Length: 232
Length: 388
Image (cartoon, rainbow over all chains, first blue to last red; front, side, top):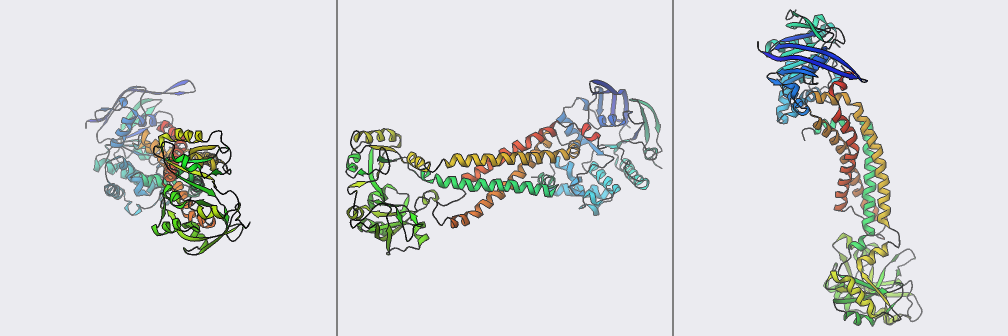
């Protein structure tokens, strides 16, 4: 597999009250196209920081990040927004759906940035909701859905614009064991059947088992990697 | 337009708060619509003024009469095209509270001077040829149910007949009106034929209250006014000539500077709205910081999210403002009915709608800009940090 994500010598430093805190220290990493990577490690190890950098939510202090041949660390804020809209889907621990919108409208949100007309947007959202098994809940507001259903809607929103890369931050962190397995199976299906490259931060070894491989971060450095089972 | 459902949903996130805010904006724009209508009504005299008309009154007081002989001398002043004269009669009809203006005029000259008044040719002819004739404004005739051909018994406030009586009787020979609503506000009056009036009055024969002067070139108004006044300088009856608009503004300001009063009230109202709505808007955006960060995460640019917040403020002001203006329009018939036609007609003019749109836009910008700029500066990772 060719590398979709190439990270070279990435350092990230935050300033807190005049003090510089280096969270990542010269990280090098290749993520091949079609990979499903679980990023693991203790709290404060820099997992989420690395995920934010890969997803273009933040920029590195030093080093380079290339995704699908594009140096995203050199993009301006506006360019990075456009890049995210076209290339990355995001899934969060607490779903982060807009409570005032129905599931359908939440899924349609990324498509508002495209040239698609209303009917096309609706059709794309219906396909995405069908893929996650929630077409019959399209008109429901997030508060009318269970946690697992909300996360499915969030996944539908993440894939509706057909991005290459899915970035997931603790996608099962707020779910019970059974629901978590359903969500992980869904992500695995998107990786296996639809070729999505997935980078997932998780504390949960059970969730990590669904990934093709797991990477361990410790104190801002990639400590080790292991081949995942690719799914129990 | 595709963002409208999103804006709408965000705006009505907390329905009670939004409805209350909308109500306060509605009331502000209702006041705006009503007060603007009052101001326009007050200024209708000035607005209806013709730049080519001058008014010549006694120099020191409008109630001092001028000799009727001045007319021919004014007509000879270069630049003067026509001259008409009018005298204040003042009147009460049936009882003390039914007061309205009555002017004694030379019918032909006066109606020629005011072509904005519309009158049927037969009515005009009857007015010119009937010495005891009178014509009434349409609104006034409607108010009292007058019909052409009837006797019009009115009591003058100041002019007694030769027998000492203040009760006069005229023949209503015509009705006049105006198409322009601003001018129509000035038709709540009765015109009587000065020929009969001057002959039948006890005092002041051979005099008139003021002259209305039509000039060929409005640019020459000041110069011609000075020329007219120079004619009568150092005479027992010196004159003061000024453009009709200046006269109307000065006359209206005898009551008070309604424009300044209205402006001050509206400034206070809109300042209150600015504080109230600005606070509500800031609070609403503060509550939604994580959601706005999500929009940025999904690829909405800083500019797009900023415009969404500004759009929300604009939608709020447009909804409340339009409802307020519509309420003002719907109240006009009731208010016009309540004044019984004693006040110039109140209406929401097109320019008031434009002004309201401008005010709504400015308020939306002032209210929406602080939270919008805050959202513009929002860093996604910081906003999401406490929410992940």
